[in-house]
Length: 252
Length: 290
Image (cartoon, rainbow over all chains, first blue to last red; front, side, top):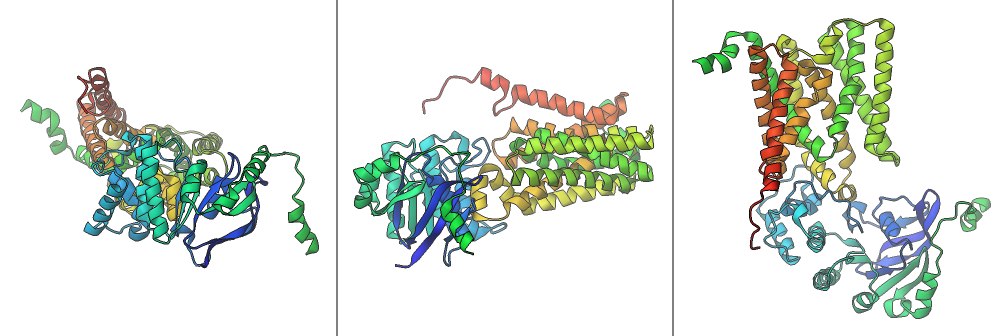
């Protein structure tokens, strides 16, 4: 297996305060990786770094031959203006952006793809509804349909099953498994440990610094989880410059 | 025949009325769709602020070269673009939201303009800049307005897709394309162009009226964005035509007459609009089965 994503001693954060501290490692192509950790552990920050919204404070994230725009990203709180008058069909159709771009037409084939994606998430019949009329779960199904259309090599899902009922999350986890079977790389931040144990072969336990990374059964142990919980959440305004960062600069 | 005399004769008898009507149609075609996007992005007041930002530029152009169409247009464009771009850049690179950064820049622009005007001395013709005069448009002005409206429609067609996605889901657009920022800046440029367009006819203070009021009207009659733009353009044209007739038959100045007609349409829409109008909300009828 070749590495799809490489973290080279990467530190991500805000205003010089690290939220993900010195993460190194590789994610193999075709992995199905769960990222778990308490609130404030840096899961969302890591994802924002991967998709290029956030520049690393130090270190780097290697994408290999992958274009950053070929990563499908589903943020935790999608910053969507739900009052905007756009139909479910058109909204999901934006997932074809990489294929259609500014002017590309939506031909028969594209319309068929959109209809298929809507059917796959169980939203057939919702085509002409405006997005403002959807419930939370339907909204999440719609966002999954768009990810489906993006046809991306790497898919990044930030807490995709929050506030979603059992039926909907079961349907959506089915899609995640399907992506895994299609040899796509899927990363998902999750809080439901049972769901992780049942569906994700690999897990990264994050608490600002990586606590454990490997096969799910070996990562989700009682010791590891309690260590992750001890993580200090608050930033320290008087924190000193990180010694690990300072060392190489002295050497140079 | 009475109806003919009232509604059609002014335009067949007088060239300046035909000119004014052509100008209003052009303004409606360019400005109303822009107004719809301003409304959907919750930037209606931003348009108003931009109109204020343009005033000093136009005034400076006027002071430097008199009542010269191109100097005033150019001055307005420069002032508007400067404010729009600076505000856009600041809000995209810092934590400050767009409205706050725009407010800061348009206030600076306004203060600067007033300072320059007071140093050079004021002139009664400045009223022309402030309130416009659609009945006194010459061929040049009409051509400028038509040209700007054409540019607006072409550019809007080019940036339409990224602009819509940027409105609905900006983070998604950022992850799939770099088109978001250029589309946003192009849109702000279109706002400025249409405000400059509006000030020739309606003056800087009312220029934004033919953009925002029709957009507000459209929201009450349509649920989809294409329908909204069609309705906005139609109601802007209707307001322009009726306003001109009103102004011709009474002594109401043309600019305010057009905006007042639009305001009446707006109030009717708020009350009786088919999507979310007040009457519909008060008397929704019995609930459905599913």
